Length: 111
Image (cartoon, rainbow, N blue to C red; front, side, top):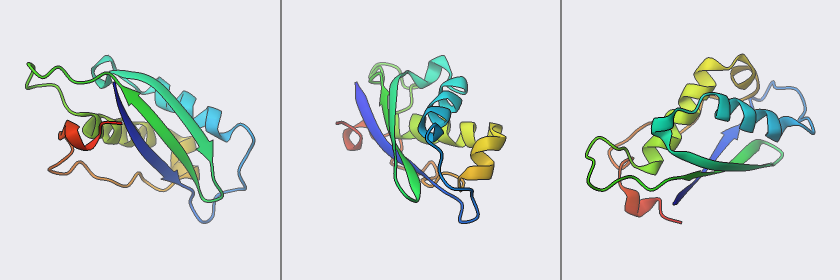
């Protein structure tokens, strides 16, 4: 299993944080996950300017060249969720961490 840490930063103009905010973010991300993501678990915590997330993914199959690493899958899920959710768009800046050249390097994402 691989673990990826990520954050969603609040927009400066966003309303004050809500007690249910983390649960809403987790629910939105679960709603936009796909089987290819291999997502097993998400946990989150609220900070003053962001929501911190730990995303746990099944380790990619090393024999399958089409399987992306956990950094790529985390970035894709956050981007997909943000793009599809008016709530995330209204409350958070677009996710940082564009899919770069090391996104498939599983050695960098092991927890």
